[in-house]
Length: 309
Ligand code: APR
Image (tube, rainbow, N blue to C red):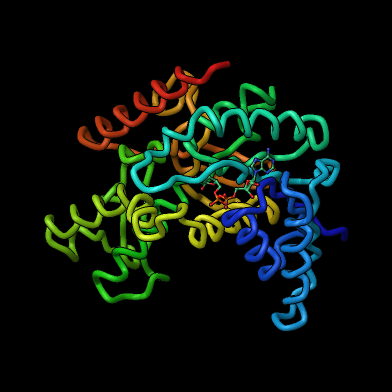
């Protein structure tokens, strides 16, 4: 059976590390693409040379030619500027929308059959832009954010309780911004709601840290934004798509008629498989959760309104 192919556009911190995770886990062969000449080929070769040590046979090739997109089952867009201290994700909107526009044109030309995963920030707006510009069915376009926000919450819960991360599950929905909605009722340790294991104050502290987790890393790094956990989450979602695993992962997906929405990309639990978004799972929200979710949707819509196309 021929191996599947994933293209990653943007071979910076996030893109290159996503290629490394995918190689290590032998998820698919990888084409790493960047506008900078030589750099993606150098990083790809460097990853290939780790193959004998780690025992993976994944083919990773780097290029500055968008022809490398041809034959991709999945294209991941990580091209764009990251945040610096003092910036919100929304501050990136104009520059990154222009980059996403150029990349999407190439995807439509070279890999129109692929599933498209967007990672560039501000995430929910860039997914919307990719959908508008590509004309692809919305179910084939997906944004990576909820997986990351949930992974961060899982890490914080595990640290707080001194338990294995393997036993911690979490669900963060809404936009990938400070208005995101971490759901404490759906955050569990081996099925036990975290609200039974920690005081309300401690739970609230972990939810608040999750909302600000991206900024916490930007503040520490000072020169850019997070990339290890984001790239791990890209690989997690890529694996679900490439191996048709039907995993339930929160992702930015097009909600029209779901969650009572009228056509907006926002983070919700999704069944991920080889067709992309195979189902949007509607979970029960209490009044406070619904209010927070609606506020997050409004913030996304406001930013989408600022897109200049
Ligand atoms: N085509 C291909 N690559 C591009 C293009 C383009 N049109 N424009 C920029 N790039 C590349 C840059 O050359 C750079 O190598 O995108 C890469 C971005 O890498 P970094 O600057 O290291 O940024 P990174 O930390 O990887 O973040 C990328 O992901 O999480 C988000 O907010 C983050 O929007 C940011 C994106």
